[in-house]
Image (cartoon, rainbow, N blue to C red):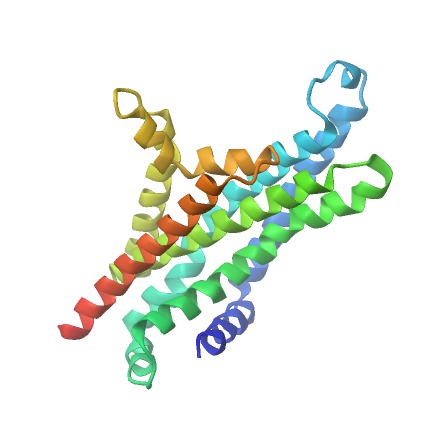
Length: 242
């Protein structure tokens, strides 16, 4: 049932122009960054660069793709959940013999699938260059994994925010607020700096962009994604109870 819901959300997303517009915008922006990185490594100052071409592509191309995923996730999620809460179609789905947790997981996978489609664009660009540039494929795959985990986390946050309101605009603002907060926590100072750094998604994504697949980073994305899904589940369960 989870996969059925995920497939339904995937198909519905690409029946609307929003997903295609987001993919097109992502492609244009990432292609421009890709060409800028190549230009920097083929120019007169290329010999003086400490970072390899693979590292530059990972940090710039995949790093900016994560920012684009942050922008896209709330826009897609408000249609998946908040819009359905507003027009009553979510109640019809909830009346089916399926658990609320399965509905949320299906919607998460469907939403993450759309975000992952955009996240594959940097991978395809890097793979097209790999045969002639001798790129480190291990580093590229690690960056791709980190980008995918980040996109799934953004989808979970956006789903939680969408469960808070039946107004898509309000839900989108709430999602952006949470995501921005998780983005800037790593810059906080004081005695609790270690905790703030741990809560910041960019600190964990950075390890993947350097080619390091660490257990602590994997646990961060799994735990925080599960946390926001649990919050969304509690919110929708309370809504059912009235």
